[in-house]
Amino acid sequence: VEGNDKKRARLNCIDHLLEQLPYEEVPHEEITLPERVFNPEYERQVLPRDLYVPEKY
Image (cartoon, rainbow, N blue to C red; front, side, top):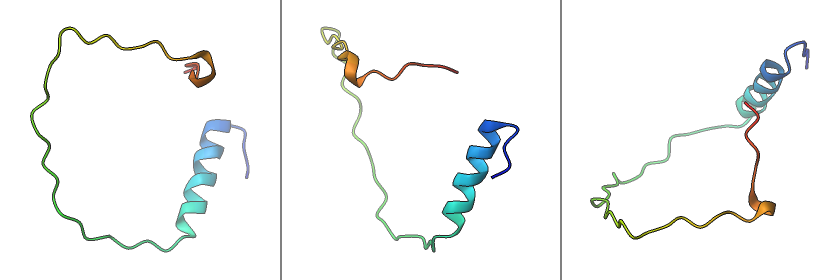
C-alpha cells in the first residue's frame, strides 16, 4: 500500500479488503427502543487502566 499519508493508506487498505468480500443485505425486522430511563443516582464506574485506550486524535 502506497502510504505517504498513513491514515489514508490504512483506510484505503481496509476499503480494498472489504471490497474483496461478497456482501448482501440481510433482511431484518425494524427495531424500536423503549424510552430511556434517567436515573440521577447512577454514577459511572472508572475504567480499569488495562481497558483504557488513550485518545490520540
